[in-house]
Image (cartoon, rainbow, N blue to C red; front, side, top):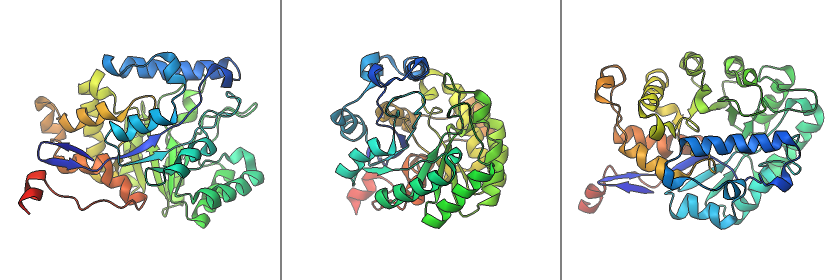
Length: 334
């Protein structure tokens, strides 16, 4: 819970990792380049006092994660989003199995999501069933630009993807998180295009498609899709840190998203450990659309910020939320 003045905010960090980016786990130059590209995002978009050394960025301990998220980061619940990248990392970069070691130890703190790749065909469907049974999956994270042998990506609209989405419905996995954002070396930019979300969201109206990174840099394409597909949500990972380095750019991003999607379909994410939630939450609660932009985008109210910071994704994942009190002062008065 984050408290600022008279306002309280229940925090769900919708996109966190427990990765191993150490040199020993980097299988080749692509793994090295991928990790270093992440570190560049961290270094270039973080406030100076929140920047880490490369060594610390490569690997965080269990205690680091608990400290950064829950002890100082205000987070009430965090959702692990796996990124396997087994062509680049010896044991995978950030797997459900690795994330799950913490989720099993701290079930009151973490939710762990699974993953699938349609190129695994029948074998992958069986693996998804095993994951769902072991982890009681409520969501999956998909990485359409991931390399697999000679293949450098896939689409949600592929026939085998539909087989997997059918399986998700059968298994009760409702939340489909899809990385559709800035490219990361050496992955191909076009493999993160948002167009395939349109088709899948129409075909599977019972599923929720949380588009991580809101399609950046294809924000306009994403907004036009999301406004006609009510089961499409915008995950704010990567967008959030621009609140520090490019506040007017962030104002435009959040303003466009609120215009097209409204405040009920946006979800907060720190993208830990690229960034830590503490400063993102503090800056977002303090943030306001610049006055000269308010005639077009309006203002950010505490109620809007509460929805974005936790209430929206809590509803998607059936997370129990304490009774929301409009203000701390009113709570004392009761």
